[in-house]
Image 1 (cartoon, rainbow, N blue to C red):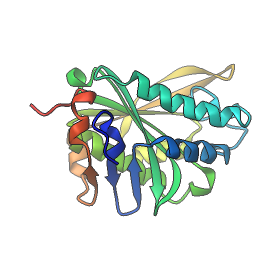
Image 2: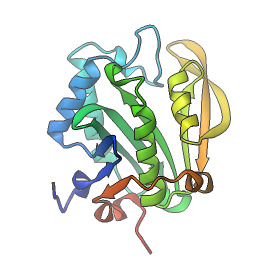
Image 3: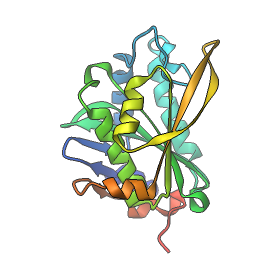
Length: 216
């Protein structure tokens, strides 16, 4: 899809297993329905904001509204790219890439979720590898951060599998109880040691200026 005013609609990142793409409005409906199928055990909460506690249709509406919010607030100084993840053309989750003052810091942060029926098959590791390729190879990032609650072993495994290293921790208020948030970091040099040659990026060039990542 080509759009001279919102070029993100043409952004694609592909690996042999998954495709990440910037969602259009039809995709947002798909993402909302996917989230309603369930992301985690109800007895756990992997997110800082417990948005998955909402009932249908408030949950689905909130997903769409959040995506619209990220569009409306995107600027070179602060942006969030929530990319739809597809495995063999089947939507399975969302992979976010976020940054503040990227033109100065060249640092990004990632976040993600997978529908429960797609978990445990290595897709989370693969989509993180894809978004790191976009960050480091595509945008020229120098550091990438992630975080996960101490009891979220699946997210920790994804970070470790992609070469992240521990970067401290802190206590957070999680639904009225203290919970330890583990922080993770991977720098450009460490990523280069593990760089894959089977990941491709399409449609990034017209997006660069809007992300504070213009090629000089």
